[in-house]
Image 1 (spheres, helix red, strand yellow):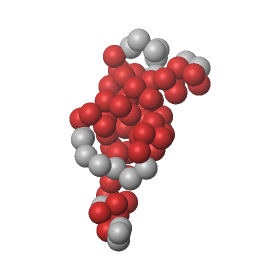
Image 2 (cartoon, helix red, strand yellow):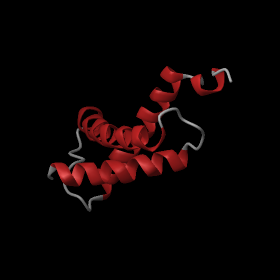
Image 3 (cartoon, one colour):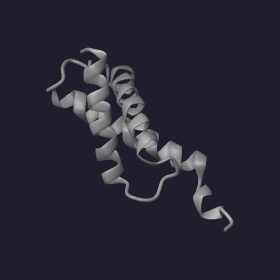
Image 4 (cartoon, one colour):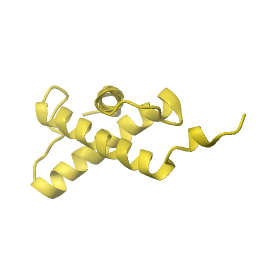
Length: 92
């Protein structure tokens, strides 16, 4: 798959991860899109390392999408743990 396909999968996976884990995140839509792209790559790598499955077979393969979504969810959870709830600590 090409880089454009990975970006597209990542953007969609990031949106799905955000829908699965609703809440206010610092950074907005740009950070969510970046989390999706990196999460998609993370999910593909984890699928290969842990399960020995080549999860990047093709754009329309279910394993590609599942790996990208799981990677995005993991990365979103890590992002929330690292950033905490900084947006609520701002003073007016």
